[in-house]
Length: 309
Length: 121
Image (tube, rainbow over all chains, first blue to last red; front, side):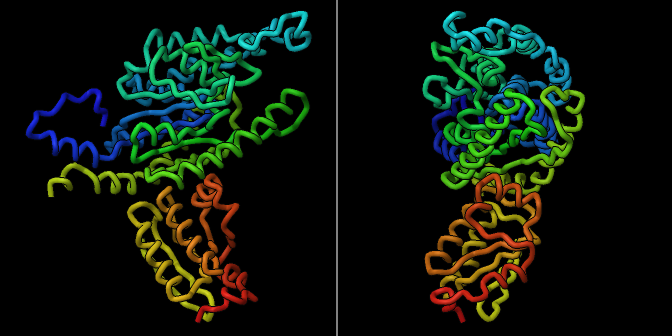
């Protein structure tokens, strides 16, 4: 449970409370990268709520950072779905960043600057994020929230557990070439998927013993008709291999129980297919529902009542 | 989870029904180690009845696989459902385990296994 929000127990009970704290499973939801497909997390949220399972922390990466933040802020599933459909529209990437394009073509003449290099103008994206989260801070969320990004200087995963939510999401979703890197606390950050597309390790590190993890493989291009598609194809190949190798390591290296929820999203989902959000949510809910009996058993095994016996 | 063990001439088929997870992992490990301890190291896990596997289940599979291979045998999977196959794929298990469409194919894959692999009863 969230110990930060709990009052300190009285001295005589402190041993039992500590034992319970130690034994009580800490449940985390990890939402990996996957753009609009991450809306499946809303379906998982629904299934968890219906089963009466609360979350002790939420971890989000890239597109998943949006849904993790909405959940952590306390938005119920229906509200999250509505906000998604309002925010995540094609306009976000419609405006080109001509300066960045010129900088790419003539780096010396145009004085190439890495912190400005993104082929899409991010002003609409930032406005939308401000609309949804305002000045909210990660450390003030109702459910502890961790957002991951990648340090552009050395490739390390950076976990943002404090600071403005909008900065966290912007950095976590700084899709290479599309959006420029984002500076947080003096570090230039890029999309979280570059260091770990489904950062289960963050939940492990923060003490989660039961981790529900949802992630998606990046889609491969149907046709390679441009340099942009060529770059996306390379990115998908690398990130999908990274997803598998990281998940394999996290599954085998720790004693935390990791339940991979893999929604069977069979329809082709493009970057801004927000019309398909209800379908995606449904698939997420269906995939999560399959695991609810086991999850309930697992949590009941370590419930406080069993400690008293 | 239910486990049925069928000992063939050389190959042992372990039919698993239910989920392979932290509540059942120990039972699974014991079932396999019982076979390996009796020098029955050519193992086939019939996964047709497995609905789900979590990370604890993956760890149990890996431990059993290492035990069997350590003695010159193997653990091969058969009839894995698509949902379970996706987890195995995501976790890299499809690159280290041999997986077959059905139990007869998995059993037949051991044909000609000699040496230590043939030491079973």
